[in-house]
Structure formats: C-alpha cells, structure tokens
Amino acid sequence: MNINDKSNPKFYVPSPDRYKTMKYNRCGNSGVLLPQISLGLWHNFGFYDSFENARNILKKAFDLGITHLDLANNYGPPYGSAEENFGRILHKDFKGHRDELFIASKAGFDMWPGPYGDNGSKKYLVASIDQSLQRMGLDYVDVFYHHRPDAETPLEETMHALDLLVKQGKALYIGLSRYSPEETIKAQKILSDLGTPVLIHQSKYSMLERSVEPKLLPTLLDEKIGSIVFSPLAQGLLTDKYLKGIPEGSRASKDNTYLQADEVPKTIETIQKLNKIAQNRGQKLSQMAISWILTQPAITTVLVGASSPLQLEENVKALDNTIFSSEELDKINKILS
Figure 1 (cartoon, rainbow, N blue to C red):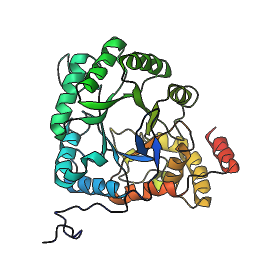
Figure 2 (figure 1 turned 135 degrees about the vertical axis):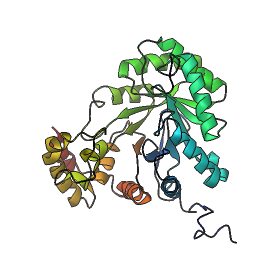
Figure 3 (figure 1 turned 180 degrees about the horizontal axis):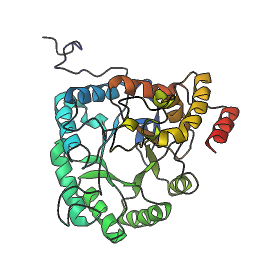
Figure 4 (figure 1 turned 60 degrees about the vertical axis):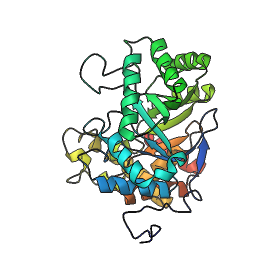
C-alpha cells in the first residue's frame, strides 16, 4: 500500500503547494506570521458533529495554507469536545506537521461546576490550560487567550497567571479576547513589564458590527498588538443564504442559535445592496465581506468557521480580490451608514 496515495483515506498527505497562494501578515510587534484567513473550531467539531467532516475540514484548511487554528476550552458541545476531537485528528493526520501549525486555545467562560471553573483567577487559568493540553495531546499551545475580562478578579492576578503559563512553557504567546481599549492598554502595560507582551487581540467585527473601529483598532495599532476578528459573516447574514428571507433549515430558522430570526428582515435591504456590489466585483457576498475586513490596517487575520471543506474553500477565495476602489468603499460605507 502506497502511503502517499491521496486516494487512500487512511493517510493524509498535505498539498505541496499549500504555502504558494495563502497570504500571511505579521502579527503585531512579533516574529509571528499568520494567514490572512484562520480557521475557528467553535462549531462543527464537537462530539455531536461528524468526526470525518471535521477531519476533512482541517485537511482542506492545511492544504489551503491555513496554519492558524483557533479553539477554546468550552468549544463543543459538550465542553471540551472540540479540543478532544482536534487532538485525535492531530494525532491521526498531522503528526509530522505540529511545527507548521499555530494553535490557539482560550479560557474565561464557564467550564466546570463550582467556584473555580469560570472567569479569570490564576486557579482557573492554570487548571484550564492543563486540561486543554491533555485533551489535545500537546506539550504547549502557540497562543493562550483570556477569553473575556473578569471584573471580579484583579487584572494583575489574571495577567500574572498568563505570564506564568508562558514562563512554564505551556504557551508561547498570550492573547486577549473581548477586552475594551482601556482594559487592553492596562493589560499590555502589566504584561510588558513582566516580559510577556500581548501578541494578539480577538474581537467581533463585520460589515454589520463595526463598534471596534473608533477606539479598539487604533489602540491595537498604537500598542503594536495583532488583531484577529471573529463572526466576519455576522452568523451567516453576510452570505447569499438570506437574500430572499429565511430559508428552511437555516440557522435563523432554529431556536437557541446566535442568529435570531428578527435580525433577517432588519438587514435584508442592506445585504441585498451589498450583494450587488459583490456581484460587480465578481465575488460572493461572503467573500466581499471578508475582503472588506482585510482593508483595515489593524487586522492581522480573519477567523472563519466552516461546515464543510467546500465552504472553507469558497471563503478563502475572498483573497483573490482584496483591492477596493475608493468608489466601492464609498458605496459600501453609504449602505452601512
């Protein structure tokens, strides 16, 4: 049996061209380069999802040059299952490629019962990274985030805990998620004094969610911190799925999702107008939405999810056209305002 035969599903051989088309940006004031599109394992990688589909998505990502993979301790469902499945896939398919991957995990949300399973204490963060490393079968993660600010824990304690994890060799870099500009500046001062400056900040950003533009993005540039943004497609609103309303079986048609049905009629006129611009650019709306984010100088990488390898491949095609004319940008801003 030829182990290099790609038709044999038992063996994965990465594309030799995987680094030829992906574009990489420097992350803040560091030596790290991140792909302009990164893969998030928030959805479709838990125990209730297809393991083989998850495996195929990760293979496709690597073949496309996506080296940055984003997880958290509570991704699933159930909690921890995305990391556990990722660890299994890493062992099966990526044994010889660990050093080509930039793997992230986070802690800061509810994870286990009791007073030590949430927020930002040193107790919680140290236990969290130990559990995450065990689930993934890793000696270290490349970047470990505090997933959200914790007003009840002194910022100094949380930052000292993150610094400790780097000094223990459990993480190479530190990230912050959902921190305000003011919180980010304070955290960066503490960590820089400790010798472990913040590498990257993660926030929500899309054409329909622009609250980070006035203060946060300039702060990240000033502080020389990289930026990774999630929900670039506004939970699917910035795709062709909702151009004619809410289709049966879509995310907005279901209860208990992050996209509520009443959001669609509020935005349908906007997304229809944006779609016309995308068509004139030779792009899908989703591709234009990703390309548009990358026009911001503060943005290092855009974090996308995927329900299939094909969907991921379509999103990465956004990088085929990331140049906007001033006329296009004016039209988009007029629509969004």
